[in-house]
Image (tube, rainbow, N blue to C red; front, side, top):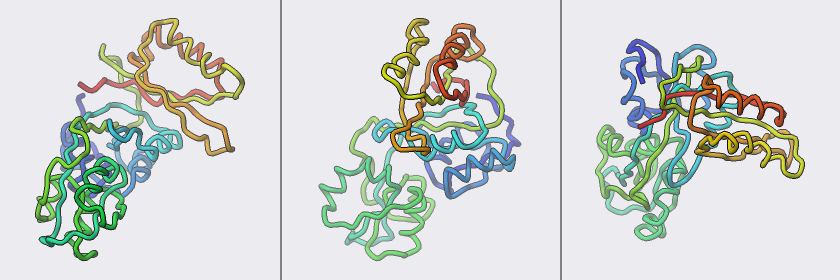
Length: 274
């Protein structure tokens, strides 16, 4: 992916997050603008405060980041790229040897659940807005005898003592981040497309919406449902597939799909992460 070095980039922060590490693989940190929530990052792009934004969307252990999915539906923006980043958590403290409280982002806490239960079964577990915010709270002495599950980068930045490394429950812990912007990317020959659509519920309708892809031998890499938030039992569906909507095979599939849905929104066609 090629982006200008002078573009303002909204990043789920504060400094030291895994999102910042992902963004650094593509953008120059000189123009980073940090936001406390994923919604705020996406909104900064929608309101033209930033040209691009970087947010987590999926983890190999814990699945989708639902706040990102919801934000993509609610704002008129596009996914223009993706980044895959291996995640290695550390347990860090402000030199306290007796840990009675562990703080982190809910996804990180889930990714380290077995470690916590085995090593700190009596500890109080508290949620933070991000793994780096957890580090900041521990460094600031807000809680006594507290430790943060955070990145090694954040622990070093905020001068915390690292008690243990690689504490996630599975070694193959990877988070997928998306770059959001305003315009669709042109085909590269190795692309992915993300869409979201709604259906009018009736027997067999979900199967019918997948048929256009199966008949054209299109590789579906993900399908997930989320509540529409309009009424109980009403769902929308997120779908990823290999290919770009400018290619006829894929555009034909989407034209056929459109006839079966209550709405269809192209979230983006973008280069597939290597």
